Length: 320
Image (cartoon, rainbow, N blue to C red; front, side, top):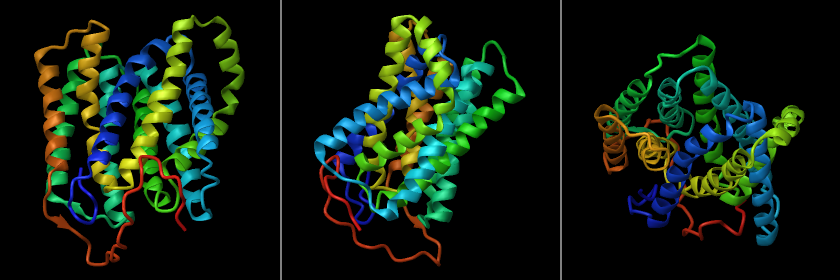
């Protein structure tokens, strides 16, 4: 991963992005367990409440204070769209379509992030980024189609996965400008809390289902809140503040490849050769998109403001 302005590789940002994609990949294994006992909305609410508790405690310990006023539009938008609507739509969509179809449709998200980032954030679009995303999407398509053994799909399920992809992209693009003013911890804490508030209509369902769910399903739900949400979204915010939204979106194409490996390791689901080939394509595309290349920047793009020296993993200060 490269520093936005200098082209210098930011090793801490690379580490943060790696933590994010590994934990997001592990979420698919946990969702499979918890989703059998919890409904889509209840699972999203339980995950977000668990994440909010952990993030809130860390925020209080670090005494970071409230995010500046300029960060709130992005925090609210991402909280409702990405932390709220995305999680419910994805959980619901995966109950109506097979995993392969869901993965294929949701992987439209990184493409939308690159296009929206180039247009709204004036990041420009490099030829390597677009080429890498094309390779990764082809790999995701191969993985998705190879996993669609049951052929089980519905128009409603596909539409829900499409909603998940769109809200995911919109949330990332909303987050990028907010991170110019708020730290990664501030952003993630309050966006997660807003997402939980948006999912409160499912609170009755969560309470009733938690009473009957086995401990393993509930622990998986808590795991989703603590690690793929609280930790992974914070490390994502740290890395996103130091690179373009398009490149960060492309990085998530490593997730399908990791899911294949984790399913093999933890669930005993041996992937076929076609699935493995698709996973390798995903990783190859990420490598291409992350490499340095010539950027095509719109003529109307505003000059970049020089960045401050990199702070720690979670900024302890706010920027006006």
